Image (tube, rainbow, N blue to C red; front, side, top):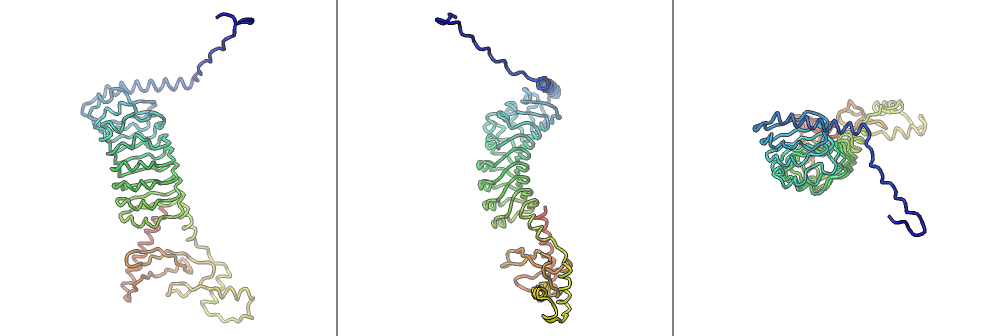
Length: 377
């Protein structure tokens, strides 16, 4: 290079050296490469034109799936690669046209390229029925999954999801959806457009409300919402007539409900006041201090006609189911004087026979147990 006029030739800055990998990283890559080569040799030796199920033992891989897998196992229907450490599945997966179940739990999937391109357009997109990707690193539901129109079961629990895409409604064949153990804060109304959904698991998230549209899931049999941030449920949830299991424990609405049902033993003052009232002990306003006279005037009668007791500050809160218009049994709060005092169940149409009263009491106890199961899990 010619020197610049009147000065020395400019010096070129040295090119930066590429970052050096630490010995631990290099050793890890070597172990993964060795494990992949070992796996390829193992699968080649186990090749079978008739094998329908293949389970890879846990090992340290990085992916993708070994090339030649579809040639070694052309009839494969079930593939389990859980716990193998895969970070990508690779295009070899698309060459398994008969595969209907793919289990890839507890891996490192979730980054760019984790799922092969064209997944929804490949024959696999029509054959796949069960897909389990729980325990991975997905921050969102992969758009490629929304093209699996024949999918019946999808598990993405224990990932890093922060939401549910509205396009989840495209999975019209979905019957089981597991999204527990993520960071989901809301449920899109479009989720209600899955006509075959029977089991919905949204536990251990950060969900604060349930959209009323969820009542349109007429096939829903099990709904798991425990350990969220729910403070109320929409009235429309009563329309889920086929619902058999509803788990709500660990939500603020249940914590408050359980706290309200806690029985605080009566104080000595209340015990004395109860004795005076129930035994009709005579007294005149001049016999007692003014505050005690006022206190005694605040006694509330126990609603159980067989009890005859009273209470002041300490009472037992009890859910009582009452018939409403002959169609619904509404849970109403009743206040009793002690845990030993049980309130007989009454309905909108009282029966005059003792047999009817007995049947009604049995019905109420069953309903109360069901309510407890719903609230406490």
